[in-house]
Length: 282
Image (cartoon, rainbow, N blue to C red):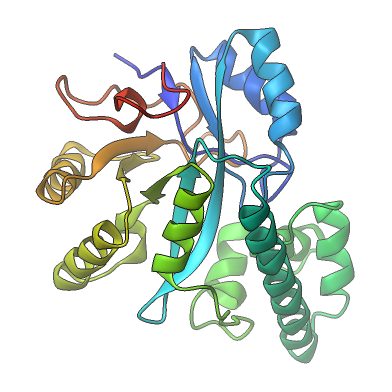
């Protein structure tokens, strides 16, 4: 049985490949009835997504995925049911864009030094006005014939420790959680297993996240086997964090989880979308 809820997706407003309206249509056609658009450090796609959601009978959860840091580790926090008109959130996201633009310039310099000139212009062209992200550089490297695919571009150049990797001074985890809460949203720890933390560090991260006011964690993000799901559910329950899940959809491919393909969570799971008192929860 598949879930009708997907609370982590991306559009062309950041590094996704589909415009918001097409993303909503794809999700609706796959049986999704509750969808969150959570672009990286921007809410620019929400208006278009909201209009498409009305057309397709989908409940849109306004969201955003904000980059933060915890003990010098980059950590992503999804904000759900945020008020995108909140002045504090707008200011915080504008600062994030500035950080991303500075990082892009530094990435381009490193790539030029490694023999890949024109990276900044190429990435900006692919972004087409959207929030600039590393996948835009990866796509440019592929389209320019320098790399066979995006995964290789990250592995050889852009990934952590790579010759074109750039560390960003993202805001602290607690600050990001507080900003989401101040904008009326629920802070959700995104894909906790993706950070490849030791068991001890993962538990410390979850403890700090919960103490800062985090409300939920993604117990499944993309493909997940049963053992990992049970592990995440146990970690969430220990900290009284609600369960969330999402495809982390970026582009339609055979190897990436798509909206509508998430198995339903076990019966009785305390989910963020059924939390009493959460605005907009059906």
